[in-house]
Amino acid sequence: MTTMPARIVHRAIRRDWRAVYAFAAKPENMPLWASGLASGLVRDGEDWIADGGPIGKVRVRFAPQNDFGVIDHTVTLPDGLVVENALRVVPNGDGAEVMFTLLRPPGMDDAAFEADAAHVARDLDTLARLMEERETAR
Image (cartoon, rainbow, N blue to C red; front, side):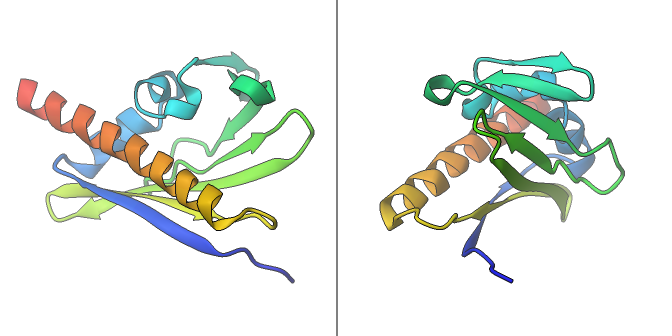
């Protein structure tokens, strides 16, 4: 059995974890913070379709709504490759910790893996900013 190197990219958010989960788990909200889905998602049965830019349309399937903060999702690329993404929101004191498990596929060089990690970090920074601004606006 082969495993891939992994990195957990995470951010603390000063907002109740349930509010963060409720916002982040809605596919309709993802274009606001997940730049890879900036073109938006269109529902297609149980799946969502996104424009993957140069790679074409991708199919995304999310974990069902749950009480555990799990926003795991699979992305099926046009060539049929399925990428498993683990995304979690957990309590962190009175706030939340959002964690994305970034897996390094075979053949990906160091620079590409670092670029992917930086991309995820920027997305989580955007999510944190959105959630904390919403709390301030209350």
